[in-house]
Image 1 (tube, rainbow, N blue to C red):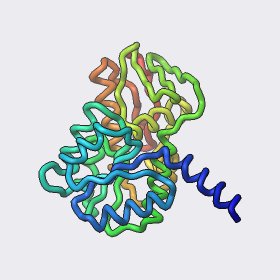
Image 2: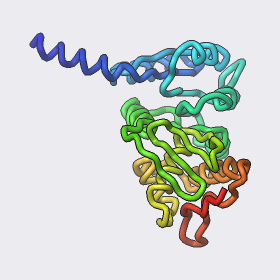
Image 3: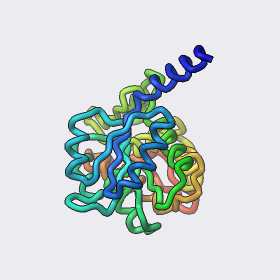
Image 4: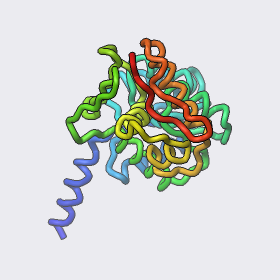
Length: 241
């Protein structure tokens, strides 16, 4: 019995390297998320508003931010904008409304996923693990296509030698296209590959990520990073830089 307890403790200590920042002005929501995360072996830090969260984020190395939209002092969208100027840490929004406008705005600001309240702690943990798995790169390899260079292990992508800053989900999208440069992906394909078939996502969510990648690449002189095949889907473009 003592040996089993020791093995379980070692497993939890290994998993506890994942540090979750929980940002919500509702202490009950924070408690539910904290208990679910810690039961799964993750470490947690809590903040009751965006201002406190910024301090906690600067103080610790965070692997995932769980973020409420409606908060006093600094709401979730403003916090997300502030974080995205300096970090591509995964961000999962908690929202009290199943509002597609909120989702589209959140994704445009750099969110990785949304969960609507009330939520199942089990579903939330599945989302956590999916997001964290997308950000974990085990192989030290380099993918190249046209002017694009992508290094999964370093979460680094460049266009003609210029850094292309992408969120974790945008990076996963581009990596998927670069691993299948001739394939045309429709919206359902991308939901399946990137999100594991999460049925709550709409086509507009996929469109937001595609639009963000295109806009960032265009700013660096590459307007043809992704091509639309009308009536079919999207594929990797010439990436001429």
